[in-house]
Length: 299
Ligand SMILES: [Cu+2]
Image 1 (cartoon, helix red, strand yellow):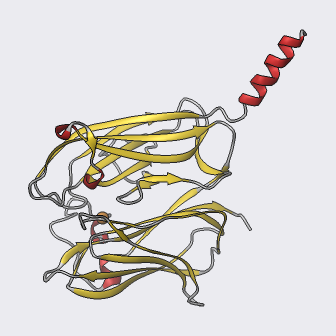
Image 2 (cartoon, rainbow, N blue to C red; image 1 turned 90 degrees about the horizontal axis):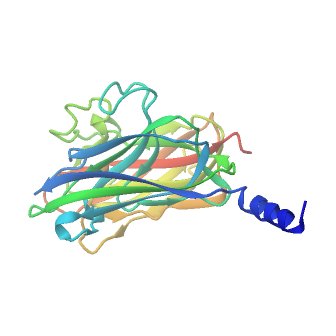
Image 3 (cartoon, rainbow, N blue to C red; image 1 turned 180 degrees about the vertical axis):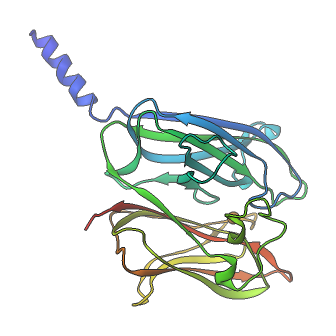
């Protein structure tokens, strides 16, 4: 082998391990006119299958308004999900569908800590889904969403998404209407919060022991904070205060990201807590959700 061949091979080996690439999914356009409530907006779905086994290191979404010269319009994001499809088409049986990544207002760019990622097996089918909303009665937008995945072939430690929500029953509040009449499985995750301050909570058991390496969350307008608490000891594992955007309509929750992670035990109870202060004089539709990306079995 010539010296040139050896150095070419070495260069190839140095480049080969990661084999990073960017995957882009274009969704839309969807049309938004006037007020559109959360979870009731127009949506777009795209069935996808990965052509190789790879690992997602970062997920982000860009929402643009074609009527506004293609300018970024993140205020129209309700949510975007990557959902394992397992043979079902968008809109058909939901029984085996499970989101493995969720992007929500203020949490539209997920970067996992070094060494961790979401596995995507070659040939596994999933759906990229985007839903719009509008807090603006004068809105008139044609929206396109671009979901971008940064991936690599070199294996990372796998993360599993665990989602938990405060339900209307937990909060002792009526569920939002007319939302969700057609989505009975998710219906009572949106409820009507009366004026004033209150703390809402939902107790749950973590489905496995391991470490949480990334947390994002979702609150509606008037949301103040979100926290993950160990029920018995009252120890706060994570708490994030909302940062209000200038328009005051949605607020972002700074995420948690850590290589060390937060230890969780399968046999232990945890509580999702959310603080709200409805400053208006009438009840408002609200939600509280946490998206925990955890590695199973890590001590
Ligand atoms: Cu919501």
